[in-house]
Figure (spheres, rainbow, N blue to C red):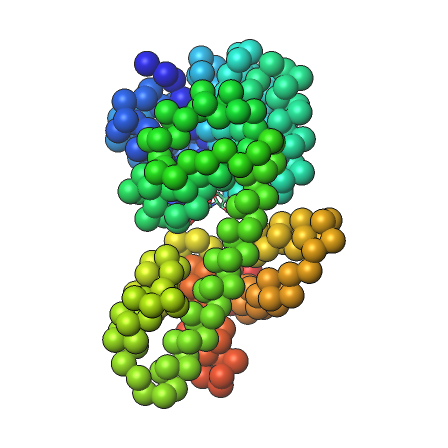
Length: 303
Ligand code: NAD
């Protein structure tokens, strides 16, 4: 039985680790807050109380952490993954981080005889629970082949997109598309509402035409119900659009609409919406259109 060390059991990591347990893998989970480790144990996983414990004896290590500095610290830091991993271990970083950081991690891994893949995912919490994530993988093709069976337990579309860092570049493009689509969906809902159109009927028919999308299908129902608990936090999408803007600038590419939506997300965050689901862009558009809504009372909480 393959032993998998899983580090980062948050919104995405917890259901992914549970699906790996369900697929028959021996999963040792570690998270900064212990409650999340206990939840995995209740589902049949094993507990680690440090990175070292999660990594020792694991053939595969999966990280699902918030941001680039978190992955750098957990993998390359003192007492990190590279300090404890046996040679030949396969490190699969599923977090969304900067492509240049993924490349640096892959290089550090190579120097220690550890194989590394960047394998960011798309599909949200629902996709993680269902095990239907879309996974964009950068790294050595042989390492991709070795990881494929494990990735099948958490995703249904799994594609090797190039060398180290390429998975993150594709994920950056994914986040650009999702943010832009979500903003336009929010604008459409405010527009329809102002015209007194029944929103549920409008969403149903829009979903069947060219305006239909996974974003509309997955996000519109909660937006209509005004449920903005994450899901995918504004803070994380703000982080991702920072990655997109930097990467676009480095390549000399203009992304005018993406830059504009990045600004709108930054503003939503500055107004206190950082901990809300990114579909709270709806609240922002409402405010821009002169409506009073529930965004302001969250200000203190997310600072
Ligand atoms: P999250 O904040 O819910 O989970 C991250 C987990 O990592 C938390 O439980 C936290 O306690 C833990 N953690 C942080 N630092 C740690 C450390 N040093 N050691 C051990 N544990 C640590 O975030 P999430 O929503 O699960 O997202 C994780 C990554 O996946 C992010 O990069 C995000 O951008 C990406 N992502 C999220 C979604 C989504 O819909 N939520 C979808 C696709 C990709």
